[in-house]
Length: 260
Image (cartoon, rainbow, N blue to C red; front, side, top):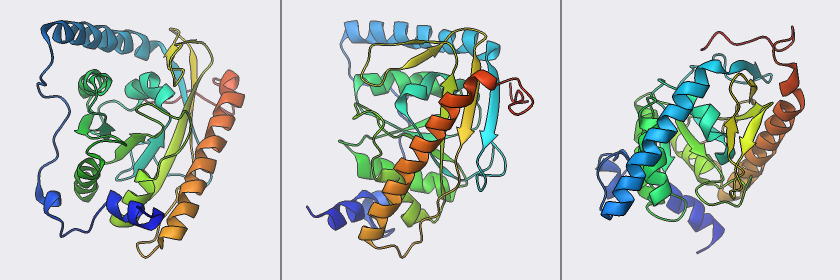
């Protein structure tokens, strides 16, 4: 498949048959073994209470680049964040009805159920399976006025590398791209492919939100490659800024956010 055909295949035209099918939240029952179901329940319970207990203790500042969205709750937008930021981002972005692409894997199942408890709606799909169907579901969510979000290097990496789905969705929907990074001054870092962060209670957190990127509907496939590179550069930029300044959270330049 050529590069152009690949971009076009990500979000087909509105007349495609699959677009009329309803999006399926990744929170329903799946066919797992008894052992898997028991482990799943334990992970969901532990994950939920980990976020619920640590989240309210975090001291958060939300910082915006020039040209970024006007408010944190602005919608609809197509948001991108790295997979390692999922735990603090789940609490900070809770109860906003954000639609998230969720992997069909076992890991995606428990993550989808955990974030569902914080007001997210997980749409089944991934970079490797059922991606087109999930992107169509996300486009319908945008049409209904909801923000959609991608953990852009998930579900299995490579770490901190952008995939083209959000850019193709932005061209199809006309909704701008936003991106953010969540830096934590003290965190336990897991020995996983994404180096997942678990914030230490009462840590300082800096959320840096980047300048909006608008992708014209008439963009060629070659131009989409340029916008994908621009999204990569923007995520690298907000990541570098947040990590460099997180220790200043609470100062005059980086005051605590009112969103608790």
